[in-house]
Length: 155
Image (cartoon, rainbow, N blue to C red; front, top):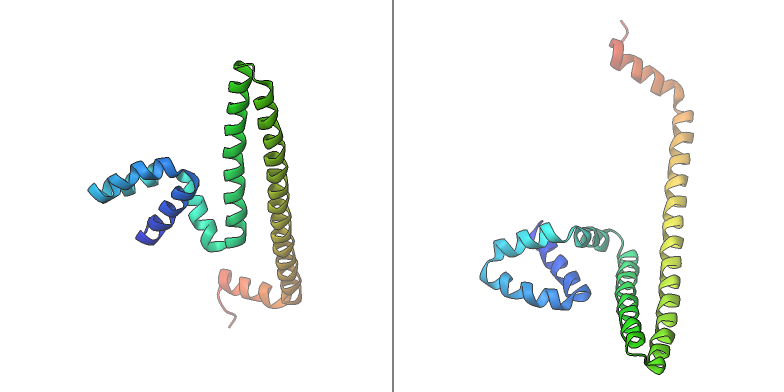
């Protein structure tokens, strides 16, 4: 991981897991090499996000929203369980309503992700179809080129 990637990974870590980032910050100052190894070893998902951030910033932001919403829904479910355990129906209902909102938001984000993935696949399919058409147009030349590669040029 380059220093640039390392900084990007740390920035993502701060956004997703601020508590963990705080703990790693001390390690970053004390032992930068250990910090780098910890980050590389412990966060393959972050490596994917670093690459995505460079390649497709819009998709990166949607993925970050999805991860954040997933964390929020898990926290709300935990709070709902605690409210149920405490037999606090009012608090449970509040958490439930918040959960409904967050799950709906996450659904919408995931739909946007899928729509973007479909568009990327359509674009890739168009490129492949164009390549196929181009190869059909160049069929004779490509066959002759391959024969020359295999047998050498004619006399």
